[in-house]
Image (cartoon, rainbow, N blue to C red; front, side, top):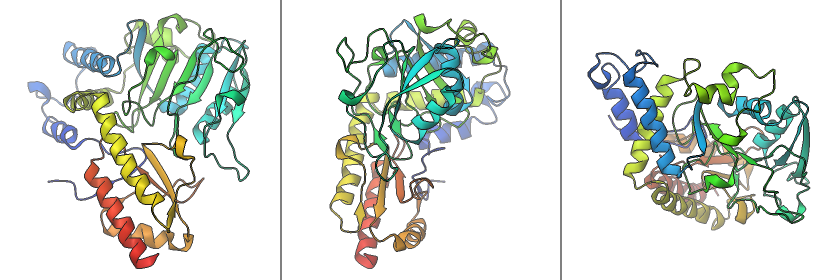
Amino acid sequence: MTRKVFNFSPGPALSPEPVLRQAADEMLDWQGTGMSVMEVSHRGKDFMALHARAIADLRELLAIPPNYKVLFMQGGALAENAIVPLNLMGDGGQADYLLTGQWSLKSAREAARYGQVNIVADATGSEGRYTHIPKQTVWKLSREAAYLHLCTSETIEGVEFQGDPIVGRGEHEVSPDVPIVADMSSHILSRVIDVSRYGCIYGGAQKNIGPAGLTFVIVREDLIGRAHRLCPSAFNYQVVADNDSMFNTPPTFGIYLAGLVFEWLKAQGGVAAIEAINIDKARLLYGAIDGSRLYESRVSKQDRSRMNVTFFLRDERLNEAFLADAREAGLMNLKGHRVVGGMRASIYNAMPIEGVRALVAFMRDFEQRRG
């Protein structure tokens, strides 16, 4: 059986077809054990070897320096909104937050429960929309902050950082003494990044890595061991690191699928190779939007996401017809988030360029018929 639709869901998102086929083949008998991978002990030597291999592959793909720990946790990025300040802000401390969309807004509101949150800039426009990344020259940074928090790819609005913040001693530069914490849920492994520029990188796995329920944390070792005294043990980075992510039973099936995705990504040529494909996919789709009289993007061109392409029909009375015709054509989950409306096509690593071509062809046909 082969896929009959192209799934543009923002997450849980599609997985590479070879990964799903291998998982299906191994479902009842993983590596000759006669058991599913979901049934074996997480502390057994077979699963521990799988776990170590997954971490090693992730380290290789992202070129993670040796002074960083890789943790597999639970609760998703939304839980990390609390776990990050509980580990890094300190008791009664403060942190800087840049607001570029709904997810960074949620992060800041959650962190405010544990300490002082300084909003360095808020990208909300006059109509209450997030459509760009504020230039660093307008950021109001706090030298006393325990960290600076960013969401480097906003899934809902389709806004994405195209580079790293400038670090230095200048007025509008991020102090080298203030670690940068980044929620990279929506674009991890889609582009080459310099992990050493960040103190902590985290995210949910359900977009480019694996199923919902698994969370990855990449944290510099010198930032571990600062947890608030009330931080739950299972969420304490020090405890999790000391126990090799096995302090409590981890999401074993999620780690297994993540490992298969890492192997698949390595077979594609790694992150640099998949980034080139992602650039082509995004360029194709944005080209169709910009060249149309029916569709429009409301995100600043320099801040457009490669992973989550948001767009609107200029005549919004056609929205339901567009979605219905798209489903009929096998193009699924194109409806935009309820907060912003419009359309959204999430074109993560696993989305083949054929899917983007099919969407572009449909959009042009729909415009000819209904535009």
